[in-house]
Length: 130
Image 1 (cartoon, rainbow, N blue to C red):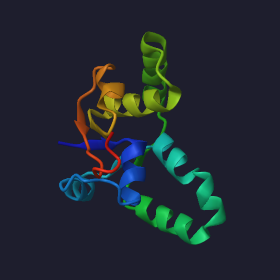
Image 2: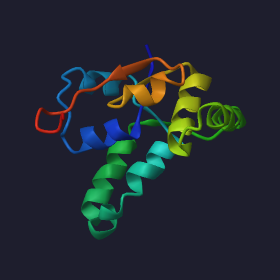
Image 3: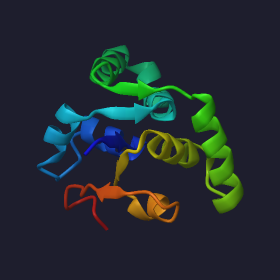
């Protein structure tokens, strides 16, 4: 099975906030992200004041396959936004998964299941699960 990691999982994993013991193996086998995830993750304003942490984040993402916004993904994103009124970042991630037949790994499975995607939910450390 091939996975596409939602931005929230990339953030949580990078910050050591996940409780899912299988996540490390899934990332080692299939670390795929959408271009929007790279933008959202590296675009965090906190990285601007901490170049060392930004460099660590870039090194972390250097292990990922980043799917660019192809014409097929753009067209699928448009359809998803029209049909489901989905936020653009989620629509791009969903469209990327649909075009490449990937399962979305996320903490918010309902965001993607309503769009007809296969998902896998990642749990967070107990102090974050509410």
